[in-house]
Image (cartoon, rainbow, N blue to C red):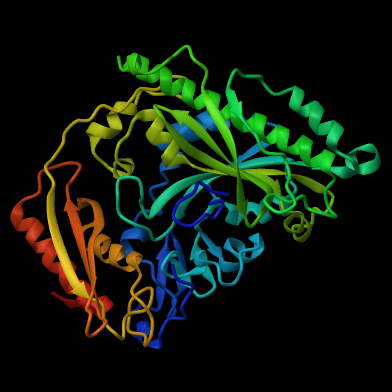
Length: 468
């Protein structure tokens, strides 16, 4: 289950069947972290993405992503919860979408949004792809899954095509309680959770027949009331732990005067929709003057548990983005930094532990260089992952992928700055502004000009646009 990005997967176009001409230029196999897979006309994973799979930032002990994972895990103790942090990133379409009730026309299935290994397999777009397998294994009543996930997306300081999520779930078994009503057991478990002094806004009823329905006939209202209360208290505890540490680090860095270290944190629960939970919520935290969405969660859809072979279990699940939390926790301004090999970045956290963290100190600010590229969209354009396809459209993520393929992390952001429709021909023109800025060095004009030429050429060759 997921943090919210462009598409809510716990959080556009619909998946276009690729044209056969793409297969002509695609290698017959692709190797991802030691696993080799046959390719076909659906394959759309560039080498820049393949190379990130082996990094496993969430397993590097003092990396900010790993430290964030460890802090959250501390709030879900063994043996009730098991931790799964080394699951392989290639999953089937069935695991990633079908098992979680994603409709056939859901935009998340599109090749404009998802990296396809082939028509049957993808790089997981969320940790929920492992949810049914975890339930089916019946190893424990609770688990956390942390992993790298992949989505084609925009280019800016808070989005990257590879990022990390944490999925959590807690189940109760009707067979273990008299009469099969688990509400009493859940309330008893709730009393064992730590209390807190958060100011919580939760104005809506637990269920609503239209906005947040009870799963009739599977669930009783009293069961869902208990499960929702346990879920919310558990996640509120995570917020307390994370933002208390963020405040401590800010004060230690002598930036605490802008905060109120004595005042209680404020959170609010907002009704939401996810394909695999009902009722569902998002949790927002009021932090430095803004409401920030932290995670999505809800009561697990019973049909998912039934097809997982655990018909008599019910419970909750949540999902969050580790980068979003880590950027707040360590005051890291640019998501590209997480993937940096620069010692000036990594060394700042070498002495950190889950109980003692420090805020990031910027080590340089290299100048930006802006370059614009303008083009007409063709009347017979590319499909969602390149190659010619009659009647398909160029998706913005295709443009972002071209820029990433050429310039990688030397680009800070790409923005649409102008669009125009010719009054006579009806042709559409777009202008994108590319901000070249390295995190590690000053780029030369000659280097940037060379990259821009390659971007322009690839836009023509891959997407079929006409440069202006």
